[in-house]
Image 1 (cartoon, rainbow, N blue to C red):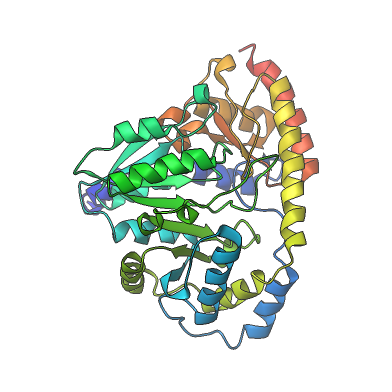
Image 2: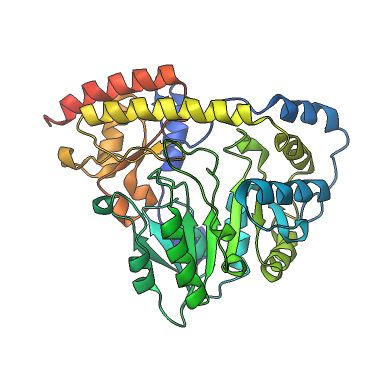
Length: 389
C-alpha cells in the first residue's frame, strides 16, 4: 500500500551506492575510506571559539537571506578574492552549497526545461533537476580530452526554447580538473548568446595545484547577469557539519531565492553563520597548509595508482582522483565492491557520477597521508589478484 503513496518523482530518482558505502565504512573500522569528500583537518581556532562564545546568543532564526554581517563579509571576499563586483544585497546564505543548487534551480527552471549537467559530474546535479521535473541533459566530459570541458559540445547541446541553464563545476568533482580562462570565456559567450543561466559551483575554489588557477566565471566581462556563483565554507574551512554555503548572482534571482528559502529551511543555522564570519578572518596560512597537504597526498596517490595500472589525469584541484579501471575488464561497481571486500578500501564507482563515469572509480585523498599510504599498499596487492580473476 505504501508503495502507491510514494511519488513518481522520487521513485524515478537514480539509485545510489554512497549511503551503503558510508554505512559499511563507519561500521567496519578495518576499512580505510577514500570515499567521502570531507576534509580531515580541524576548522580554524576562531571558528571553534565562536561556537563557545555565541552558543547562548544564536538561538533564534536568522533572516532568510542570512546574517547581515556575514553577507557583507562574503561580498567583500568575492570582490577581493574572486574579482566579482559583488554587493551584500545580492548574497544569500544557505544550508551548504547543495541547498543553493536546489533553490537556484527552483527559482529559474520550469517543468520540462533542460539543464545541461556535466557527465561525469557531482552526483547531486542530475537528481535535483529531476526532482523539479526538469530535464537534465548531460554534456560529456571525456577522458580522451583529458577531462577538459568542451565548449563546442556544450554549444551543440543547447536546445533553443528548451535549454535554460548550464551547471559548471570548477575545480571539478570527480575529475579534479580546473577550467581554464579561455574555456570559461567561450562558455560565457555561449550563455550570453543563448540567454542561458550559468550555475557555477566553486566549492573547491581554494584547492588548486601546480600551475592551475581558479577563476570565477562571474568575474569575466559581460556575463555577470547570467551567472549564479555558488561557494561554501564546508571544504575550505573543514566546516561540512556547519552547513553554511552562499550564492551570489543577479538581484532578481537572489530575491527569488530569498523568497523560496522561507519555504525550504527558512535560514542557515544562526550559530554556524556567526562561526562563518570568523572563518573569513582566518589567516591565509591555514588554507595554504591544507592545500599543500592535499597536493602532497594527491601526487603520491596519483603515482601509486599509475603503478597499479590505474592511470588517471594529474590532479589540478579539489581532492579527488578519477582513475580508469578499464584494464581490469570489470564494471565500476564490481571493482569498487572487490576493493572493499579484498583490500578493505572504500571508494566510489564512477557510475555514481553519471553514465560516462562507467569504467572509472573516484578516490578522495581528504584523509591522513599515513592512511593513504596503507590504502595504496592494500589496493596494489588486491589489484594483482583482481587482474587474475
